[in-house]
Image 1: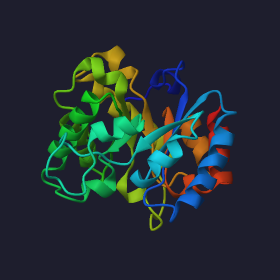
Image 2 (image 1 turned 180 degrees about the vertical axis):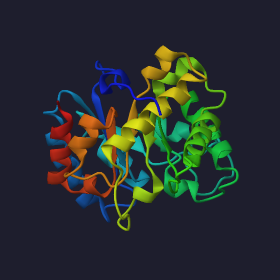
Image 3 (image 1 turned 90 degrees about the vertical axis):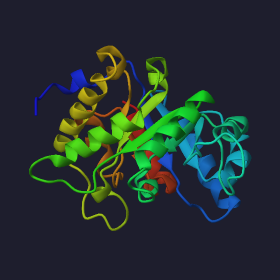
Image 4 (image 1 turned 90 degrees about the horizontal axis):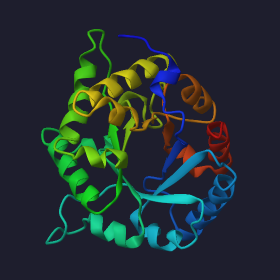
Length: 265
């Protein structure tokens, strides 16, 4: 794979973007308020970082009222606008709550309907963009192979996920690369910055294949895969990414605050 300088992968005018995905945590609103408040205090000091907290839906309304330096995100969205879809949350509902970002295509979501998932994700993205939400599109392979077939898998996720998206909406898209084999408590290891670097270049090249080069270069690419306080700085410095998608470490205020500090460079 062609090698380019890190500076050529990055838009140096961009703030670093750190996304906290709380998943189905914490257990109650009191605990959510405490964690949220402490993160907000830390984030307010990080002038070069955009901090996005993707909350469980039940906490969005309560925590949105105490936001100043944090951006609010949701963890998923439904592809329809309204109707008889029990348990689903529409993009317009999220927008009316004050949500600004939404995660689409997380690996945990992709486990359902694997044959149709890219089409479903594409419909979700279209609906979210219609409601002026910013998209955090997650892509990533289940495993790596020596013949690099996994690259075709990632390419397909990107192209099918963003199919038909107006180029003018590209500034509302963020790509989060999260290799499935590196996610979760049972993950044996995270990615290596040097390998991540090559993946970022490949993703940027894929985006350029259906968007113009300047547009593709301005789409932020994040890394998510067992990000923690020990590896965050190295990924940001040497991985060619504009930010990080942080899972369980985002629930530990001191650790997450250190990650924000590492990004504030």
